[in-house]
Image 1 (tube, rainbow over the protein chains, first blue to last red):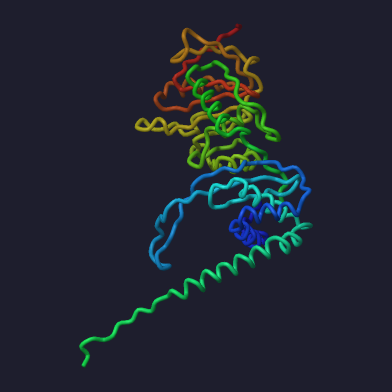
Image 2: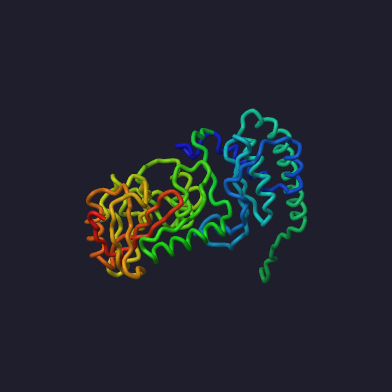
Length: 154
Length: 199
């Protein structure tokens, strides 16, 4: 759409899209409900499910290989005369992809951006960070250090 | 975000619209010269409904599309919906969208396939002003019982001479689907043509 795909908008947009994609559908429903009333939604690509190939790399070196496929749902729409909002989420929840796209469309509107970032995206990001931290801690308690006594050294 | 020309939607009913468009394209090429009605208008798109539906049904990310009118919003639109990339040169294209038939390049500039792989040739989608108001041309060949008369308007003077060369190159050569508003008319490379003067 623009000549330079990596413009100043891209990094913050990637950030909020990743936060929204990790949120649950109930959280997103609630967030969109607080922003009502919305202008009519025009679907450019109704929510549809498909597959993506996940690529991985062992240990950060070596060649990339295909880890496996995951189901993914995507949606593209405009809210009133807004910019194009897109939603991509793992799984087959079409409503969730649609809600992400609605929020993405509204977030690109500079008049509403700060409000939505503060009331929707920031709390979700915090919550997700706490949850990740808790999972990390509980996994850390089960960590086992392997060490071997030297045998026959006497 | 700068977005001067907003993208417009694709198929309203993706599965059935795509199946219908594909079926009509097959029918059109199986019965050269017989017009088939295909698709309703796509809101906001500057291409005819038949052209729009054919593009949505036929192209994907493996089929480069050459646009006679370069850098248009339709090009963005197709990339968004099907992933069909614009081809830099007519020779690289699997499909070509020609909206000004009088100024189109020679048929031989498009991919004609090779004797080993004649299917690797281009299919031209040509939007013409009318399928009823041109000079009368008689078609004969596979898919036509006796003969079929077509009156395609807006073609360049040398077009039918080029077509005879295209037919003579069989099995190589391009196939054409003419579109006009919601109608599509197929002209595969197997079809022989004869100009009917004063008909």
